[in-house]
Image 1 (tube, rainbow, N blue to C red):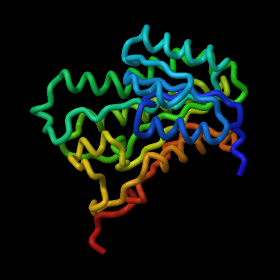
Image 2 (cartoon, rainbow, N blue to C red; image 1 turned 120 degrees about the vertical axis):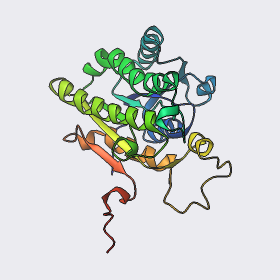
Image 3 (cartoon, rainbow, N blue to C red; image 1 turned 180 degrees about the vertical axis):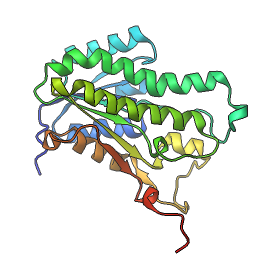
Image 4 (cartoon, one colour; image 1 turned 30 degrees about the horizontal axis):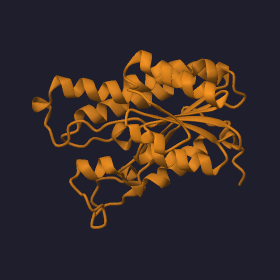
Length: 243
């Protein structure tokens, strides 16, 4: 199927590694001209158009979006993939305020700042699409990761609210909510430096999530907005009833 993305212009945040990096590659494979943004300087190795910026800083976020959009000559697609885990295995009573604030700054405020800066460019597109990388943790909970789960729930509602507000401008906003993804971040969080080969639960690759992102970004899905794309092998649909 032709996804009708050829020659579209996309900006991907959190693009130095993991899901963001995979999204850059997947979009490029569809003929999209892609700009990559990350606070990690290694983002320069991911795309010809790249910006190193701390997206929790309003001025830096605006400057990065402007630089990338001007270089590309506009924006049709925005992928908000920047995110951190924060404390893992830390009970609520031992969670530091600084850790809570940092997780929300990166996962939620950063997404807000980038989308706000990108709006004028997206409004000028004939087929604008935003894909927010949330998590199944927006809908189900894991002990010891309260800041992460709360931030992803906020990010999911951010995507839904933005889709409603931007509908009149023809801008679609959707969220993908993957379960555990094999990325450097998740390997570090779970202390699995060699990967998930022995995991007793299903794990997806960053490339598989990137494929979902590309499909949601495609004009082929023009009627789809405000979607919560749950990507968890159907685990959350299972009842706890012992039958």
